[in-house]
Length: 155
Image 1 (tube, rainbow, N blue to C red):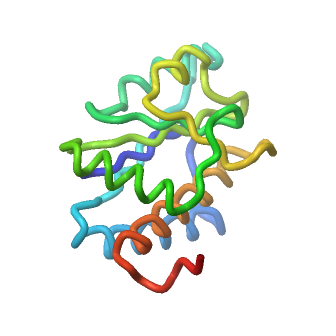
Image 2: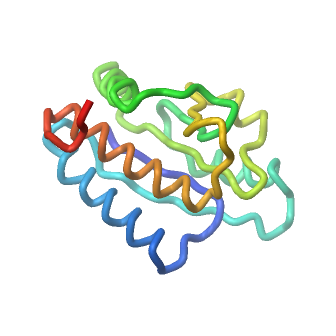
Image 3: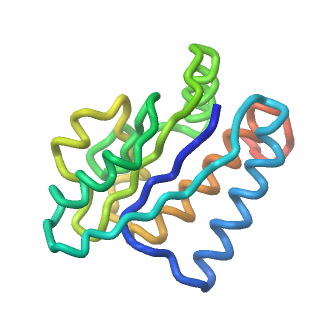
């Protein structure tokens, strides 16, 4: 199952970009034998100033067929093993693609959030959308390592 990370904004070179690249490369190596990956990153920018609704339109066009998970502070809080189980279930149910959606500075348009198969929260705090990319990338790698039985995740 291919994963798609669809995000508002461009991640410039720097420490966040280095971390995202590292964790996604680790995910690709670990997930390959599990039928997971690769991860494709799609970045969109609303140059017309349409706000969350404009961003949602651009994000919808970037989404593949398959399960969609939005990252949102109002979403469900999952443990790392639960996220791993979710990925495995989607894969085992025959999904060829799954998408994770990160909104812009104002978050995800409520209509897009309501359309998603899962809305995931990284906790009750609000995180900058560029840091959410790092945290999600690490959790994807952690999920693959859990499914592979690797010692990275210590329960």
